[in-house]
Length: 410
Image (cartoon, rainbow, N blue to C red):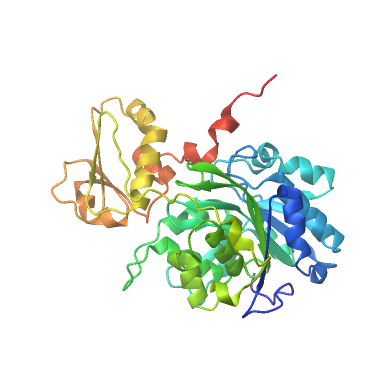
């Protein structure tokens, strides 16, 4: 939200606190102890963790429950009225995700409300300075609160580089409207992926008042859900979400300047990512840098009865196709028993494709006449399946983690 941020003491030299090595609860309390939370007294505060998928603690997919517990306790002690809300990806039940993540239990023990933010009609929010995006469908509950706290997991992201406190606010968008950020046309005069510009557009009207970045167990590689868990035992907190993200990026072995949505937003004046301008405590915080593996620049895609025509594509489309085939290849040939072979095209350089080729992503638009076309930069895998089957679906890899699918141990 863009009303005055009472927690931000300096817009030009924001403070960011880092805590490490004490476990998720103590790390979070230690990080928050270095910030002045007194302006939250008497305020209604909405905590927005990352619980968009059904996953258990420790997988690096959802926010650790003890981080949320510490945030509830610290803000309640500061005199705030606290609730926890989420709008998960399509097809995921918010309350099931809260229960599986362990957050439902810590909230219940503290008498803290849990909100499925998709249950009410949305509020239309215009973006006057938008470049790729000109309005949002915002979950109505966000308007009921004075302060919003973004509590993401520290993750790499196959499409946006990283996903931290700024991007986590995408989970305040109502239902399937989140998908629209992946389906935008190219921005005229820009080679940047539309989704990165759109996230910066979103940040012009939707920024948290406080960021608490959960690096207890992060995710490297093909985040946000198909990468590898990365133990960090670190929490980052600050009232400038861009500054907190910049510190988290450095801890992950990268820089905010190389993350397009952060660089674009900072250049527009939405926050600070220049590390020398950020007051980071403690002074030796960079001793805790543990580089994360980045999403692969080139992926090998080999599946029986599938040919991928890849000409000058980026890793975002490559990873999307890889996850799509891993999650759905067998289902596709069940859906279409007459199929003997599936041709897929990604990238700008394809010509003379076989008839019926599935063309994926904005760069493949020039080949749409050869078969079916799925726009997006890149599209989410559920949109690919929807195009093929004509039926709404969700991404089976994103919706539920493999561990969450396992039967409970008696």
